[in-house]
Length: 610
Image 1 (cartoon, rainbow, N blue to C red):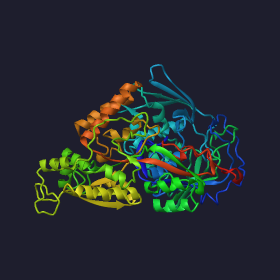
Image 2: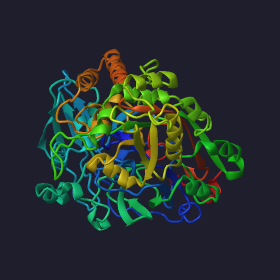
Image 3: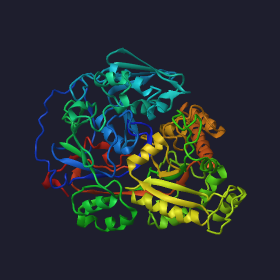
Image 4: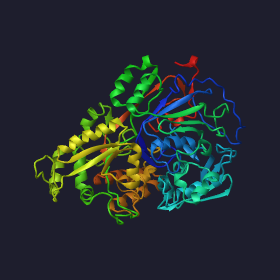
């Protein structure tokens, strides 16, 4: 799957970890649009018309495959895509981003405006908007969610998006339907940043927040009737290890061009499948109507079977998802038994290796990316050195600093560290006689990532480094990444923010960020380069001057790559098959590539299908 930079109206850059597949089976044959929905409630005073090429019909269901189950239904705390792909549908934001027009638009806020100096923003909420339990959504809920987002103990990933120069916004509410936000200086990402804060119900969650239990609120064990949502969907059922079923929120304020309440579908099902191979078999059997993550080795067969399979195979170009690995540089922030404040989470020898820039550069230069593209990725990928991949038309930066395949120079760097193969076993020993080695973890459900780990193992062995691929289940990996730091290196990636702007990834690049993978939540920058990146990020988001923003982003990419904190790997060319049975399905390279407009997708009556 994928952890995202900043999900659509969700947290910032989240981890790339999984597989999303749109399915009709469980949908397909069983998901026919057979019923006419009778709206049980009058529309609110301020509806939101959501444009789409076709007026749909009610009924049917759409099934999405997941290779990892959600960890939480808490929209503010969720940061992995297995959770946020769901929570962004359960909860709305003040604004959102349209993949088709690539423009921000007002959502829960029916309108907004900024002062002439760009320092005061006023958001006007829709009157009549309600949570899924019928309770009105007001400015009090927005204030509450900002308070949660700024909580230093919780430190949700979105917090970095909602600060300027390290300072929180001043948020007030002069009345129930007006929110005023004051900021110290203009902020290029004001609308998408504020829109990324999903609105959760104060009347339900405030008690848990006051007693310090917010992080565990709206967990996967929460009863559906107790999980109150603000978005187009509400939870109908969660079966651990099997599926998550959503149904339309009967109070949602979104309507189509005829004033009919959305969504059209009766159900949206996230079906948990063990791996990509199982997903492919389900598609081939006609049980799944679309796949958002196809293995490149299968591209040719999908292309050749479109007419026979009654689907379209869309070529979206280089993906905005990335693959890379990094080394654990985290330190203990809160000492526990056996640990002292400031001590590394791994043994001293590994920590000394990993913190050495020449070691990291040597590892990068040992990896044959061209060979990975041709073998593991079947030629369906491009080299990539940034979260702004070649698929990002606005922010891709050709020529950034990078360390590509050069095994001879890698060997020279390692020899310069004084490392030699003393015992003749093919692997280097450091000055203390310890074999230079590390384990490389990834999520076991992702076949491509596991294959890349095995390929990296072989490449590193050629320069004398022993790498041990260690596939683990996704939830264990996330615990290692964010909580106990029990790992030496991890191979994952990131999914772009929505919009795909580098400023939406502040939680990755800022030293304090929860997704600053290699050394999370530093109380202050621990290297000069990280301090410089923090300043450059301030520069990037603190102006609307495009040239200044692009130059700051170029420098950030160069600094990250010069330090080799991230060992970049190739990025896939995204291709997705969608069966010709649904209306208003318009795949986009911007996440979520198929579900971005699921509130407008409908199951076509049998006689209307191509």
